[in-house]
Structure formats: structure tokens, C-alpha cells
Length: 119
Image (cartoon, rainbow, N blue to C red; front, side, top):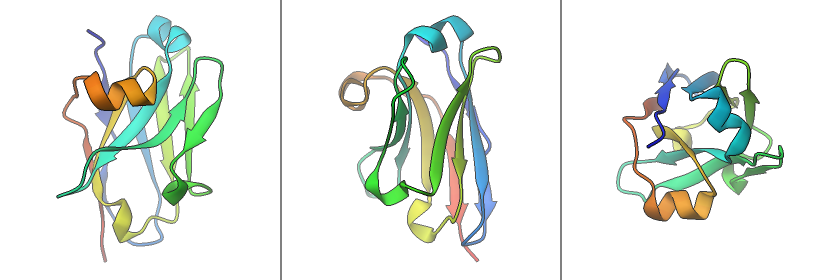
């Protein structure tokens, strides 16, 4: 089982920015697709940003141009930089390893990190 630790969430005003961090083994990071997901109250969990082991990025339409996923192999870390946040971005954010379709159906989840966008 892959061990992941998410951090960086918090309360931010609309229009603000946050950086989320996911720590994972560097060796796994080199081999696996990685993604950030979120689940808002009363809604299904959804993929927010995804990066393949080859570096191909994919984003949910709702965050394109605002969120950026990057990874640091040396630190074994995946980041999600979020800008121009709005209330629709309020959710618990999770990271996970693997193809996004598989992750959403079969993966187990950590505690995530809460992001709240509110004035």
C-alpha cells in the first residue's frame, strides 16, 4: 500500500492562493501517475489534476488555468498550486497514485487536507 501524506490546506479568501503538498516515496513518484482529487460536501470525489509518469498533465475543466500540478522527484513530493480560488473549490483534497479512473473506483484514501474558500 502506498503511503501518502497531504498537507497545506486551510482557510483562504476568494481570489486567494494555496499550495498543497503530497509526500510520497521518490521511487514510486518516478514510476506512477499521480493525481490530486477533491470531494466537496454532498458531491462525488473528482479528479482535479493528474500527471503521468511521463509528465503529461490533465486538469478538470473547472480548474484549468488556475491550478498547476508539479512533482519533485528528489523530495518525493507532488504539489498542487491553486490560484484564483473561489467557493466552488471548497473541498477536502486528496492525492493518490495511479491512473485517475482506477483511483476513483478502487483506491483507498488518506485523510486529505481541507480547503475552505470563504470571506
